Amino acid sequence: MISVIIPAYNASRWLPETLRSVAGQEGADVEIVVVDDGSQDETADHVRAEWPQVRLIRTENRGVSHARNTGTAAAQGDLIQYLDADDLLLPGKLRRQEQLLREHPEVDVIYSNWQMLEENGAGGFSPTKKIQRSIEDVHADPEIAFFSTLWCPTGAYLFRRNMVEKILPWKEWLPVIQDARFAWDAAAAGARWLHDPEISVLYRQHRSGSVSTRSRRAFLLDCLANIDDIRNLWMKQGPLEGERRKTVLAGYEDLARGFHGIDPKTFHEVHERLLQIEPSWLPSRGSLRLASQLLGYENAERVALHWRRLKTAIG
View 1: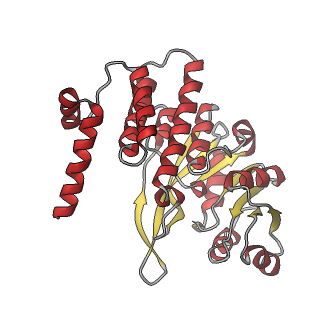
View 2: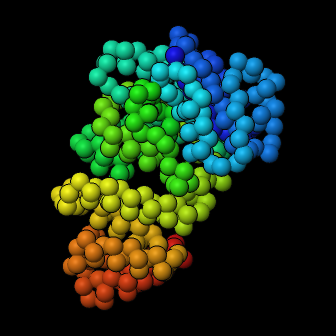
View 3: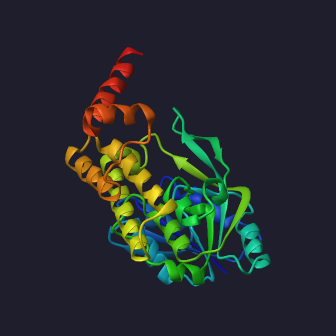
């Protein structure tokens, strides 16, 4: 059986369509668990009235990771499908990925391609770009791939329950990027992956943005906490060398640039982390690297920021 776990907070506008996309999955034995994370709208009332077959769990508002942990503890399936309350599974997703796991008993996690749904001016959503790439397209090492740029919405995955038990819990101390961290935790736990090349899930991109786009600083702080934690985990395994060292430096460099002009104190803290790893560190970008040699890194970033603002004002 596949347990589909849907955390929902004030999701009454989106949840009906999401539930229909799950209920319409033919050829799969499905249990649906909705965890209402302290909603103040009609989310719970709608589930009770319209979806009696759905298991509804109500909790106080403690965040999406707590809701997923709660739903996982209650789920009965030997396969776990996480799904955000505003995303949609495409027809055949669960049957196809369950069959892939049956054909490949050595595999722990299926992950698929996915497509963006972007909100239009009329308040509806239109399909836009398709994301079609595998772990190997980013890096041969899944830990580095998920640490750097590989990301899929939760609906793109299908997990074996025994692998989920190795990964748990969802990181409640990462309020913004907990989904990216869960995939990395799977890689760190030794998960064996299989790429499903089909588009299996539609991911809504709201005009108001996700948490990461509504609060840039909150997103960057979450990323910093995540990089610090993974860096420490890697260092417990031995010196930070090779691709891991390179990846951590690149992550901190991106954060330093992000914090500059937003949070000077944290910018300096991230710069110090870079110098701890590489005392002679300089930015990787050629122009910024040269300016840093001449002016110092902070002054080079200041000049670059003014230049970007000037270009924006001009045109």
